[in-house]
Amino acid sequence: MQTRTVTFTNREGIQLAGRLELPVGGTPVAFALFAHCFTCGQNLRAANRISRALAAEGIALLRFDFTGLGESEGEFADTGVSANVDDLVAAAEFLEREFEAPGILIGHSLGGAAVLQAAERIPSAKAVATIAAPAEPAHVLHLIGDAVEQIRNEGSAEVSLAGRRFRIGRRFLDDLDQARMDRHIAGLRRALLLFHSPMDRIVGIDNASHIFQQAKHPKSFISLDKADHLLSDDADAEYVGRTIAAWAHKYLPAHLAERAEEDLRDNQVTAWTGSTGYRTEILANGHVLAADEPASVGGTNTGPDPYALLLSALGACTGMTLRMYADRKQWPVEGILVALNHEKIHAEDCKHCETREGKVDSITRRLRIEGPLSGAQLKRLVEIADRCPVHQTLRSEVVIDTSLDAPEQPPDATRRRP
Image (tube, rainbow, N blue to C red; front, side, top):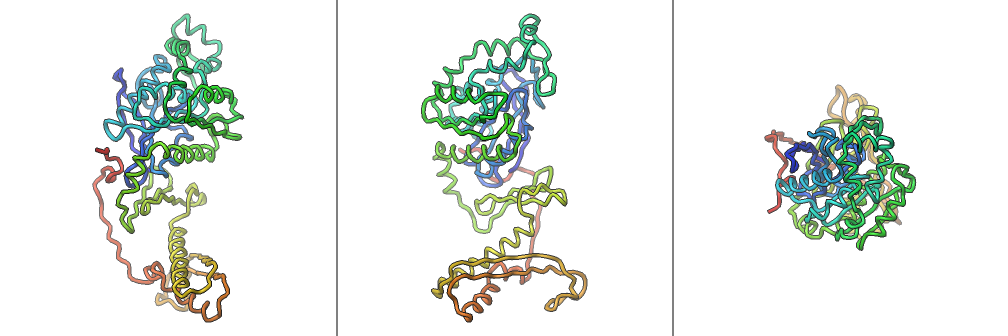
C-alpha cells in the first residue's frame, strides 16, 4: 500500500495529523475511516496491519491522531468522547472534500463507541465495524480509578494509562455521563460488524453481546478467539482487515461495479516500496501481490523475494504452456508440477554458457507430468516447456527503458470521483 501524510482541521480549528493509506495503483473501491483506541494513535501496529489487509482488497483507509494525541495539535485534557466524534466528522469531511466520502467506519475499543455515535453524522457511511468496543463509554472509568474525584473537584488530573501519563479533564467525564449508547446503536441504520475476543481483559465480551442485542439488522458478530485487546498478534489484525473487506463489499455494490469496469491493460504492473523495510506492494493487472526479503538480509519475510517471483513467472508460464499444448493434442495430462531453483554459478562450470569468466545465473527446472502418457509424449512435452513465452524472454535480448516521473500521486489512486 502507499501512504500519504495528511493534515486537516477540526471544527475548533485544531490541526489533526493522519495517514491516508491507498491501494497500489488503480482507483480505490471505497474509502474507510479508522478510529483508534483510547490514548492510542495512528501508529498502532494493529491499525497498520488492518490497513494493509484493506489495501490488498482495494480499500483506502484514513487513520489519524485525535486531538491532543500523537502528532495532532490540541490538549488531550480538553477532549472527550464528543470531541472524538467531532474529529471523526471532520476527518470524513476532509475525505469527501479531497478524495471521496468514507463508505466504511472502523473503530477499535473506545474508538468503536465513537464511530457508533459518529455514524449518524456521516451519511456516506454504509458499513460500521467495531473491534473490542465497550457498550458504554463509561466502561473506561475503571482505567482512571481514584483520579475520578480529583477530576470532578479540580477540573483535571494526571493519570497513568498503558505506561504513559495523560491529563484528563472534566469534559471527558461529562461525556461519559451523558452518552446514551443504546440510542445510537438502535438508530444506527447501517450494516454492523462486531469483533470481540472472549479473552479480552480490558473490555469484556459481554459488551459485544449488549451491542449486538441493541442493534437492528443487518448485524454480524465474529469472535476473535485467543486475541488480546490490542490485537498484538499480527495474524489477528490481518484477519480482521481481510474480513472487514470481504464483508463491506456487500454494502458497496456501486464501487465494485466501477472497479469491474476499469480498463486493466495487459502487462501493467505497479510496485510500491515504502519508506521503511523492503516489503513491496505489487498491483499486476488488478491483482495484488507482495514481495519482501528474508529476515536474514534485513527483510520481514512477508512475501517472496524478487527472484522467487521471477521463478514463479517461469513456473506458471511453463505449466500453462504445457496445459495448452496437451489440451490441443487431447493428451490425457492430469497434472503438471514445475519445480525451479535459481543460483549463481561459476561460468567455467557451465558447459553450455558462452560466458567463460565470472558467474552466470543458472535456473534448474524439473517437471512431473501426471497421466497415462507414452514416452514419446513426455519427451515432446519437455521440448514444449522450452517454448513458454517467459522462457523465451529470459533467453532473448531484453531492453529495459527507465524514466523518472515527477513526484506526484499515482494516476487515479487518489483521484476524487466526479
